[in-house]
Amino acid sequence: MQFSLGPVLYFWPKAQMLAFYREVADSDFDIVYLGETVCSKRRELKFDDYMAIAHMLREAGKQVCLSSMTLYESPGELRELRKYVDNGEFLVEANDVGAISMLQQQGLPFVAGAAINCYNQHTLRRLVSMGLTRWVMPVELSGQWLTEVLHQSIIADIRDCFRTEVFSFGHLPLAWSGRCFTARSENRSKDQCELCCINYPQGREVTSQDGTQVFVLNGIQTQSGQRYNLVNQLSTMQGQVDIVRLSPQLSGTFDWLAKFKANINGTAPQPLPATDSNGYWLNLAGMATG
Image (cartoon, rainbow, N blue to C red; front, side, top):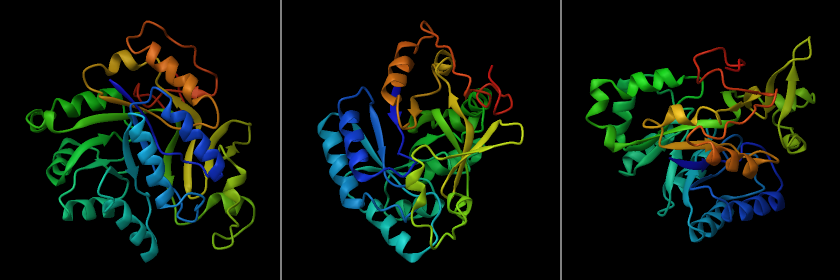
C-alpha cells in the first residue's frame, strides 16, 4: 500500500505553496499530485511553476502526477489543459471527461480522478479500455461497494491493468458549480471576485442554524463540513486498495501521514477528532462516525 498527496484544493500564496512542496520532498509520500483543480483564476502558480516543482519532487524520489481541473468553461482553460496533456513527462489525473478525451486521442495513460462518474463495473472497464491505469473511487461510495465492483467477473480479468486509489483524509470535494460561492458569500460577482478565496486557506465554513458545520465553501467547489478520515479503516482496505490519498491541509498533513503509516495494519488505532467522520466508507450517512 502506497500513500499519495492530492493536489492542494485551496488558494494559497505562491511562497506558501513552494515552502509546502519543499516539505513534501522530504516526506514519506510516495505519489504527489500537482495542479489547480478548482478555479483557473487562481494563478499564483502557473504551469511552468508546477513543472519545476514536479522535477524537484521527482528528483526527491516521488512519483508525480499532474491534475487537471474539474470544470472547464472557456477556450483558454482548454488551452491550459492541452499543456498538461502534452507535458511529455508526467502522468495526468483527469478530473473531467474532456481531459480523458484529449489523453485518449494521444494514446496516453491516465488516472481517473474521484470527480469522474465511475459508479459501476461497466464504466470502470470502459475507462480501462480508454487508457486508465489508476482510478480514484468516487468519494461518497463505500468499502463494501468497492469490494463488490472489484469482484465482478468483467473486472477480474483486467484487475492487473489498473490500480485503485481511495480519498482517505481531508474535506471531501462534493460538487462544483459555474458560480463561485465564496465570492457570493462576500456579495461579489464571480467576474469581480478579487480572488477573495485566498483569504480562506481552509475554505469558508457553512453552519446550520444549530451551529453544525455542514459544508466548506472553496470557490466553485463545495466540500464536506467534516473532515473525512479513514486512518482506522486501513486494515479493511488490504488487498483491494493500492493507494491511500491524503488531501493537503493548512497544518498537520505530515503528522497525519505518520499516523496513517503507523496504523497500516490496524495496530495503532487513532482517536478521531470530533470534527472528523468516516461514514461513507462504512456505508453510513456521510457525517456519521463508525
